[in-house]
Length: 103
Image (cartoon, rainbow, N blue to C red; front, side, top):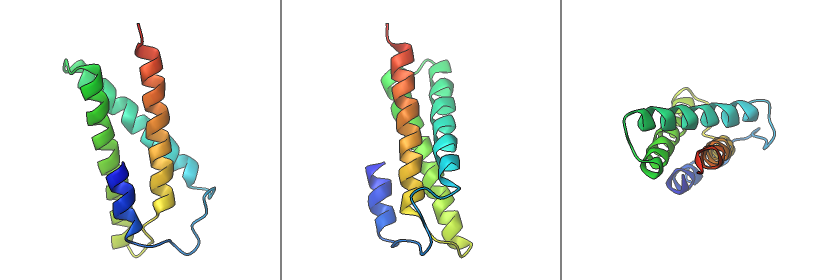
């Protein structure tokens, strides 16, 4: 996600983008779901836990960046703050997965 943030910083800050805007919880929740489903999918294919987490993070990052690129293409702002909420959701899901899978 570090690359995603660095990439996003090149686009500048959106005009009315607030840290606690109405869409931020959606970014958090969507990223958490994508991370969790991605992890579960990779684990079903006999991928090790660490590799499954990294692959799920790659999928989540790709979807997050894709959403912001799509917004930019549609004339809306590319939001670094949205990406931060995506990272927070993915990170929270990852911590929950690690805690739930400890033996």
